[in-house]
Each structure stands twice: as C-alpha cells, then as structure tokens.
Length: 279
Image 1: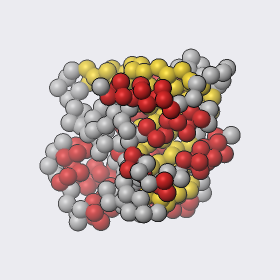
Image 2: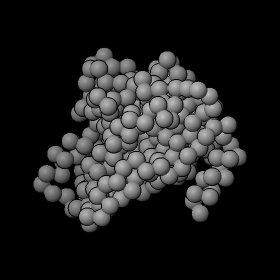
Image 3: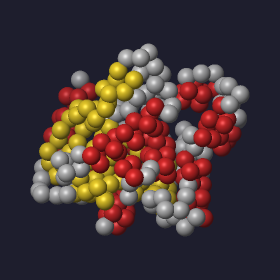
C-alpha cells in the first residue's frame, strides 16, 4: 500500500523524469544471520546529463522509516524541479542490525552510486547527501568520514544529532537508556558513553571535508536546535564552510513543517545552496 501511495504522489507532483523503484544496491547480513536486500529509488531528469545528484537518507530513530516515507517526500519535487538526480535509500534498522550497520549501509550506497554513475547520469563530482533526523546523523558521519569512493561534495543535514553525549546530557538528563536501546539494542554498558562519542559526527570534523548546510527547527524537542550550530561552529573553527538555516518556531520533522507555509521556506534556499556549492 505504501508503494502505491508513493507512486501516486510522484505521478501527481513531479516533472518529467524517469523513476526507477526498488533497485537492489546490496545484500547485507541481519543480526540473525539472514540476508537483507537493501534497495533504493532513483529519479533521473530527461536529457543527456550528467546531472547534479542527491542521495537522500530518511530518519526514524535508527529503527524505523523507509526510502518512500512521508518524512522525506517534501524533498523530491524541489530536487526534480532543479534538475537533480535524486536517490532515496533504505538501510538496515535496529534491532535487525544495530549501529554501525546503518552507517555502513550509507557508505555502501555512496560506493554503489559511484560505480553506477554513468548508467544513471550522475555527475560524480556534484554528489550531495541529504538526511533528516537519524538520517541527518548518518549523512553527517558519512560527510565527515568519507574518502575516495565514499567522499561527497556537499551535505544537507536536517535536524540531525551531532554530539550524542551532549544531547543526552541536555535532553535526557544523562540517562543513556533510550539511546543505548535504539542504537545498540542493549541496556547502558560501562562503555556506552565512549561508543556514543565514537558515533558522534562532531568528533570527526576536519579540514578538507565537504561544506554543510544545516536546517533545523528552533523548537525541536527531539533533537535540540543547538546541535546544528555547535557542529557548524566546530567546522568554521577549522576553516570548513557551513551555514545554518533556523526554521523559527518549527518542531521536529519536515513532514510536520508541511502543515505551516512558514516552515516550508527552506526549499528555495536549500536548492540555491546546493547549486552554488556544486557548481
């Protein structure tokens, strides 16, 4: 049913483009030893190409969501209208495969796109990542840690957590229980804080990494707004380009933003930033 709704949404709202759904980009193991087929959807503009490209990574607390979820659908039309190839991916979810499986799957997707760039009219030199919430966390990790065939040219990060220990300290009063269960499928262990530091993108910021655009609601109660300017400040301190677009009064989730026209104004500046950064 979800795929039927998704197909109807695209047919009604997207300009002329070729949409290919459910392309397998990897087979990976689950915690029980079975195999999981990872799939993606690709929308390619008409024309010769190659085109600037965005890989989209959905959120869902590392344990929910999918490539066609309404949380990322608001991105599809602006990218298509701007002449982008967009690729929305699935990744392993906890508890099937706890962290870092989902981060590894994002890196595998980048490598797959690199290997199939010509086939899908992808301009490999103009490849961006876009992620929201847990997907924002994953694209921030990929953007800071990528190299070689996993390096990208730009990252757009919607309300992603970047310093997990600080977030837990501020939001959960230092209680690691919920985060440990979500990411690692376990109760807090003696090394949980160290593992969360290892999973925090802010600790991988370095010279030479791609520029970032952060877009974040100022009244986000799931991922506090200060997570984005803190990451950007760290990048600027090392001479790395970044910008923050605050969505004044907005809660968590761009699907929630669609209910208020004042919260959908990020789309034009996001596209403008991508075009400028990837030119």
